[in-house]
Image (cartoon, rainbow, N blue to C red; front, side, top):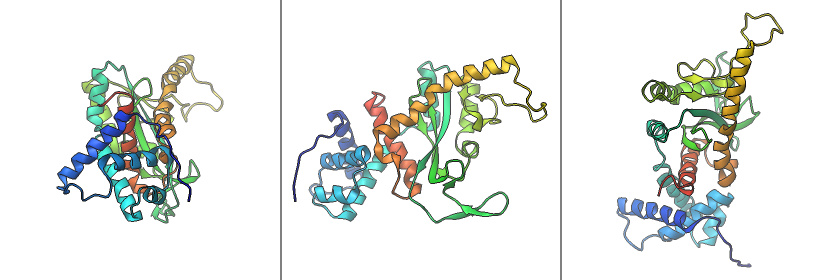
Length: 279
Protein backbone atom coordinates (compact mmCIF):
# COMPACT_ATOMS: atom_id res chain seq x y z
CA UNK A 1 0.00 0.00 0.00
CA UNK A 2 1.34 3.43 -0.97
CA UNK A 3 0.90 6.48 1.25
CA UNK A 4 1.03 10.07 0.02
CA UNK A 5 0.46 13.60 1.29
CA UNK A 6 -2.25 15.92 0.06
CA UNK A 7 -3.37 19.53 0.57
CA UNK A 8 -6.91 20.39 1.60
CA UNK A 9 -8.16 23.42 -0.32
CA UNK A 10 -9.61 25.34 2.62
CA UNK A 11 -8.34 28.09 4.92
CA UNK A 12 -7.09 27.25 8.38
CA UNK A 13 -9.79 29.54 9.78
CA UNK A 14 -12.59 27.38 8.42
CA UNK A 15 -11.03 24.18 9.78
CA UNK A 16 -10.54 25.73 13.21
CA UNK A 17 -14.10 27.10 13.15
CA UNK A 18 -15.46 23.61 12.51
CA UNK A 19 -13.09 22.18 15.15
CA UNK A 20 -14.53 24.57 17.74
CA UNK A 21 -18.08 23.55 16.87
CA UNK A 22 -17.18 19.87 17.23
CA UNK A 23 -15.37 20.48 20.54
CA UNK A 24 -18.41 22.34 21.87
CA UNK A 25 -20.65 19.45 20.81
CA UNK A 26 -18.43 17.00 22.70
CA UNK A 27 -18.65 19.15 25.81
CA UNK A 28 -22.43 19.29 25.42
CA UNK A 29 -22.52 15.49 25.30
CA UNK A 30 -20.16 15.29 28.31
CA UNK A 31 -17.72 13.20 26.29
CA UNK A 32 -14.65 12.47 28.45
CA UNK A 33 -11.39 13.88 27.12
CA UNK A 34 -9.35 11.31 25.20
CA UNK A 35 -12.27 8.93 24.64
CA UNK A 36 -12.65 9.75 20.93
CA UNK A 37 -10.55 8.13 18.23
CA UNK A 38 -9.99 11.50 16.53
CA UNK A 39 -9.42 14.99 17.90
CA UNK A 40 -11.95 17.69 16.90
CA UNK A 41 -9.39 19.06 14.42
CA UNK A 42 -8.86 15.69 12.71
CA UNK A 43 -12.60 15.11 12.64
CA UNK A 44 -13.03 18.54 11.03
CA UNK A 45 -10.49 17.64 8.33
CA UNK A 46 -12.30 14.34 7.75
CA UNK A 47 -15.61 16.17 7.31
CA UNK A 48 -14.19 18.83 5.01
CA UNK A 49 -12.62 16.16 2.77
CA UNK A 50 -16.08 14.61 2.41
CA UNK A 51 -17.73 17.94 1.55
CA UNK A 52 -14.98 19.11 -0.81
CA UNK A 53 -14.07 16.01 -2.75
CA UNK A 54 -16.91 13.51 -2.20
CA UNK A 55 -14.31 11.18 -0.69
CA UNK A 56 -16.07 7.89 0.16
CA UNK A 57 -16.59 7.54 3.90
CA UNK A 58 -15.01 4.05 4.05
CA UNK A 59 -11.85 5.57 2.54
CA UNK A 60 -11.92 8.42 5.06
CA UNK A 61 -12.26 5.86 7.85
CA UNK A 62 -9.35 3.82 6.54
CA UNK A 63 -7.14 6.90 6.20
CA UNK A 64 -7.81 7.75 9.85
CA UNK A 65 -7.52 4.20 11.22
CA UNK A 66 -11.09 4.14 12.47
CA UNK A 67 -13.98 1.78 11.81
CA UNK A 68 -16.42 2.36 8.99
CA UNK A 69 -19.35 2.86 11.38
CA UNK A 70 -17.30 5.42 13.33
CA UNK A 71 -16.54 7.23 10.08
CA UNK A 72 -20.23 7.51 9.23
CA UNK A 73 -21.02 8.71 12.75
CA UNK A 74 -18.30 11.36 12.60
CA UNK A 75 -19.59 12.67 9.26
CA UNK A 76 -23.11 12.88 10.69
CA UNK A 77 -21.77 14.91 13.61
CA UNK A 78 -19.98 17.31 11.25
CA UNK A 79 -23.17 17.78 9.22
CA UNK A 80 -25.31 18.38 12.30
CA UNK A 81 -23.06 20.95 14.02
CA UNK A 82 -22.74 22.93 10.79
CA UNK A 83 -26.46 22.76 9.98
CA UNK A 84 -27.25 24.10 13.47
CA UNK A 85 -25.44 27.34 12.50
CA UNK A 86 -27.60 27.99 9.44
CA UNK A 87 -29.98 30.96 9.88
CA UNK A 88 -33.73 30.54 9.96
CA UNK A 89 -35.79 32.22 7.27
CA UNK A 90 -37.01 35.26 9.23
CA UNK A 91 -33.48 35.93 10.47
CA UNK A 92 -32.12 35.72 6.92
CA UNK A 93 -34.77 38.13 5.61
CA UNK A 94 -34.18 40.62 8.43
CA UNK A 95 -30.43 40.53 7.77
CA UNK A 96 -31.01 41.13 4.05
CA UNK A 97 -33.21 44.15 4.80
CA UNK A 98 -30.67 45.48 7.31
CA UNK A 99 -27.94 45.22 4.65
CA UNK A 100 -30.03 47.39 2.35
CA UNK A 101 -31.15 44.71 -0.11
CA UNK A 102 -33.88 46.03 -2.42
CA UNK A 103 -35.27 42.53 -2.92
CA UNK A 104 -34.49 38.86 -2.46
CA UNK A 105 -34.84 36.00 -4.95
CA UNK A 106 -36.26 32.51 -4.61
CA UNK A 107 -35.30 29.51 -6.70
CA UNK A 108 -35.48 25.72 -6.47
CA UNK A 109 -33.04 22.96 -7.32
CA UNK A 110 -33.23 19.19 -7.53
CA UNK A 111 -30.33 17.47 -5.76
CA UNK A 112 -29.80 14.12 -7.42
CA UNK A 113 -29.74 11.01 -5.26
CA UNK A 114 -29.47 7.27 -5.51
CA UNK A 115 -32.76 5.55 -6.27
CA UNK A 116 -35.19 5.22 -3.37
CA UNK A 117 -38.08 2.79 -3.74
CA UNK A 118 -40.82 4.87 -2.14
CA UNK A 119 -44.16 5.48 -3.80
CA UNK A 120 -47.02 7.90 -3.32
CA UNK A 121 -50.28 8.79 -5.07
CA UNK A 122 -50.50 11.79 -7.35
CA UNK A 123 -53.57 14.01 -7.59
CA UNK A 124 -55.15 11.52 -10.01
CA UNK A 125 -54.74 8.65 -7.57
CA UNK A 126 -51.99 6.98 -9.60
CA UNK A 127 -49.02 5.45 -7.81
CA UNK A 128 -45.79 7.30 -8.65
CA UNK A 129 -42.18 7.23 -7.48
CA UNK A 130 -42.10 9.75 -4.63
CA UNK A 131 -38.51 10.87 -5.19
CA UNK A 132 -38.61 10.94 -9.01
CA UNK A 133 -38.81 14.34 -10.71
CA UNK A 134 -40.77 14.26 -13.94
CA UNK A 135 -39.32 17.67 -14.85
CA UNK A 136 -35.70 16.53 -14.52
CA UNK A 137 -36.27 12.83 -15.30
CA UNK A 138 -34.17 11.69 -12.37
CA UNK A 139 -34.32 10.83 -8.68
CA UNK A 140 -33.70 13.63 -6.23
CA UNK A 141 -34.81 15.98 -3.50
CA UNK A 142 -36.18 19.47 -4.13
CA UNK A 143 -34.71 22.36 -2.10
CA UNK A 144 -35.63 26.05 -2.27
CA UNK A 145 -33.10 28.83 -1.75
CA UNK A 146 -33.44 32.51 -0.88
CA UNK A 147 -30.62 34.69 -2.21
CA UNK A 148 -29.72 38.37 -2.00
CA UNK A 149 -29.59 40.53 -5.18
CA UNK A 150 -26.02 39.36 -5.91
CA UNK A 151 -27.13 35.73 -5.85
CA UNK A 152 -25.41 34.94 -2.54
CA UNK A 153 -27.37 32.24 -0.66
CA UNK A 154 -29.15 33.39 2.49
CA UNK A 155 -31.31 30.40 3.41
CA UNK A 156 -32.24 26.93 2.20
CA UNK A 157 -35.48 25.07 2.80
CA UNK A 158 -36.17 21.59 4.12
CA UNK A 159 -36.04 19.01 1.34
CA UNK A 160 -39.16 17.82 -0.44
CA UNK A 161 -39.32 14.70 -2.65
CA UNK A 162 -38.52 15.26 -6.32
CA UNK A 163 -42.18 14.77 -7.29
CA UNK A 164 -43.11 17.94 -5.35
CA UNK A 165 -43.31 21.14 -7.44
CA UNK A 166 -41.46 24.32 -6.42
CA UNK A 167 -44.71 26.20 -5.84
CA UNK A 168 -46.03 23.47 -3.53
CA UNK A 169 -42.78 23.47 -1.57
CA UNK A 170 -42.97 27.27 -1.36
CA UNK A 171 -46.46 27.12 0.13
CA UNK A 172 -45.18 24.74 2.78
CA UNK A 173 -41.95 26.47 3.71
CA UNK A 174 -41.50 30.07 2.55
CA UNK A 175 -44.53 32.03 1.41
CA UNK A 176 -45.72 33.07 4.86
CA UNK A 177 -42.32 34.57 5.67
CA UNK A 178 -42.08 36.24 2.24
CA UNK A 179 -45.48 37.90 2.74
CA UNK A 180 -44.25 39.13 6.14
CA UNK A 181 -41.02 40.47 4.61
CA UNK A 182 -42.95 42.38 1.94
CA UNK A 183 -45.41 43.93 4.37
CA UNK A 184 -43.11 44.57 7.33
CA UNK A 185 -39.65 45.00 5.78
CA UNK A 186 -40.63 46.37 2.35
CA UNK A 187 -38.65 43.49 0.88
CA UNK A 188 -40.19 41.97 -2.26
CA UNK A 189 -39.23 38.60 -3.74
CA UNK A 190 -38.42 37.81 -7.36
CA UNK A 191 -39.30 34.35 -8.66
CA UNK A 192 -39.41 32.51 -11.97
CA UNK A 193 -42.54 31.32 -13.74
CA UNK A 194 -42.82 28.29 -11.49
CA UNK A 195 -43.85 30.57 -8.62
CA UNK A 196 -46.59 32.36 -10.56
CA UNK A 197 -49.65 32.98 -8.43
CA UNK A 198 -47.70 32.76 -5.17
CA UNK A 199 -49.31 35.94 -3.85
CA UNK A 200 -48.48 39.43 -2.64
CA UNK A 201 -44.87 40.50 -2.80
CA UNK A 202 -43.69 37.62 -5.01
CA UNK A 203 -43.06 38.99 -8.50
CA UNK A 204 -42.91 36.56 -11.41
CA UNK A 205 -42.87 36.85 -15.23
CA UNK A 206 -46.17 37.62 -16.89
CA UNK A 207 -47.49 34.80 -19.05
CA UNK A 208 -50.00 34.82 -21.88
CA UNK A 209 -53.57 34.75 -20.66
CA UNK A 210 -55.42 31.54 -21.46
CA UNK A 211 -58.27 33.67 -22.79
CA UNK A 212 -55.99 35.60 -25.18
CA UNK A 213 -56.17 34.71 -28.89
CA UNK A 214 -53.62 32.08 -29.95
CA UNK A 215 -50.41 33.66 -31.21
CA UNK A 216 -51.25 37.06 -29.72
CA UNK A 217 -47.99 38.68 -28.46
CA UNK A 218 -47.61 40.16 -25.01
CA UNK A 219 -48.15 43.88 -24.58
CA UNK A 220 -44.90 45.88 -24.86
CA UNK A 221 -45.16 46.93 -21.20
CA UNK A 222 -45.43 43.30 -20.12
CA UNK A 223 -42.49 42.34 -22.33
CA UNK A 224 -40.42 45.11 -20.77
CA UNK A 225 -41.42 44.00 -17.27
CA UNK A 226 -40.42 40.41 -18.05
CA UNK A 227 -37.08 41.48 -19.50
CA UNK A 228 -36.26 43.58 -16.44
CA UNK A 229 -37.32 40.80 -14.07
CA UNK A 230 -35.26 38.16 -15.86
CA UNK A 231 -32.29 40.51 -15.96
CA UNK A 232 -32.43 41.02 -12.20
CA UNK A 233 -32.89 37.29 -11.61
CA UNK A 234 -29.95 36.31 -13.79
CA UNK A 235 -27.67 36.15 -10.74
CA UNK A 236 -30.01 33.86 -8.82
CA UNK A 237 -28.32 30.78 -10.32
CA UNK A 238 -25.14 31.82 -8.53
CA UNK A 239 -26.55 30.71 -5.18
CA UNK A 240 -26.76 27.00 -5.90
CA UNK A 241 -23.57 27.15 -7.98
CA UNK A 242 -21.63 28.50 -4.99
CA UNK A 243 -22.71 25.47 -2.98
CA UNK A 244 -22.54 22.66 -5.52
CA UNK A 245 -19.31 23.67 -7.28
CA UNK A 246 -17.41 24.26 -4.05
CA UNK A 247 -18.83 21.38 -1.99
CA UNK A 248 -18.87 18.53 -4.49
CA UNK A 249 -20.66 16.10 -2.20
CA UNK A 250 -23.84 18.02 -3.13
CA UNK A 251 -23.51 17.04 -6.78
CA UNK A 252 -24.92 13.59 -6.03
CA UNK A 253 -26.25 12.58 -2.63
CA UNK A 254 -25.55 8.95 -1.74
CA UNK A 255 -26.96 9.26 1.79
CA UNK A 256 -30.68 9.03 2.55
CA UNK A 257 -32.52 11.77 0.60
CA UNK A 258 -34.04 12.89 3.89
CA UNK A 259 -30.56 14.02 4.96
CA UNK A 260 -30.41 16.52 2.11
CA UNK A 261 -31.92 19.20 4.37
CA UNK A 262 -29.04 19.17 6.85
CA UNK A 263 -26.33 18.47 4.25
CA UNK A 264 -27.31 21.56 2.23
CA UNK A 265 -27.66 23.67 5.39
CA UNK A 266 -24.18 22.53 6.45
CA UNK A 267 -22.77 23.53 3.05
CA UNK A 268 -24.52 26.90 3.42
CA UNK A 269 -22.75 27.45 6.76
CA UNK A 270 -19.39 26.57 5.22
CA UNK A 271 -20.04 29.00 2.35
CA UNK A 272 -21.13 31.79 4.69
CA UNK A 273 -17.96 31.36 6.73
CA UNK A 274 -15.70 31.37 3.66
CA UNK A 275 -17.31 34.61 2.47
CA UNK A 276 -16.94 36.34 5.83
CA UNK A 277 -20.61 36.23 6.83
CA UNK A 278 -19.86 34.39 10.08
CA UNK A 279 -16.69 34.09 12.16
